[in-house]
Length: 110
Image 1 (cartoon, rainbow, N blue to C red):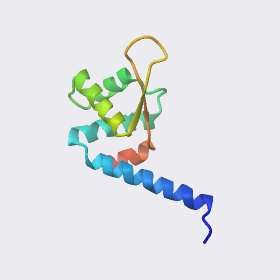
Image 2 (cartoon, rainbow, N blue to C red; image 1 turned 60 degrees about the vertical axis):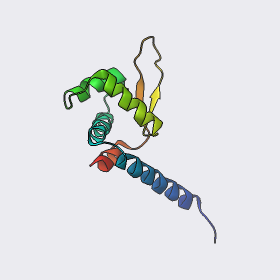
Image 3 (cartoon, rainbow, N blue to C red; image 1 turned 120 degrees about the vertical axis):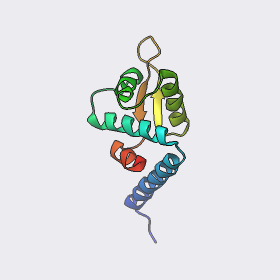
């Protein structure tokens, strides 16, 4: 039996989806809502996803302090759901990058 590149890529995509679904299952309802909001903002594609602008967008939908928001971002990063990149400028702002297709994240969060 010969394994094709297409087979490997298909298996990889399936395994990524399994990781996403299992990780989302471990989240509390408020965390799922936050992750869904981040994915919706990413899907809207309004430039780079900066932590401060994400917080402003999320705060309209959820009641949350910035400290709680930042702690959840760190949790998502540890779970490999997002990547938190250091700033290119001075300050505490961070660039947030989803590790999965935003549409898949929205679907997984329900």
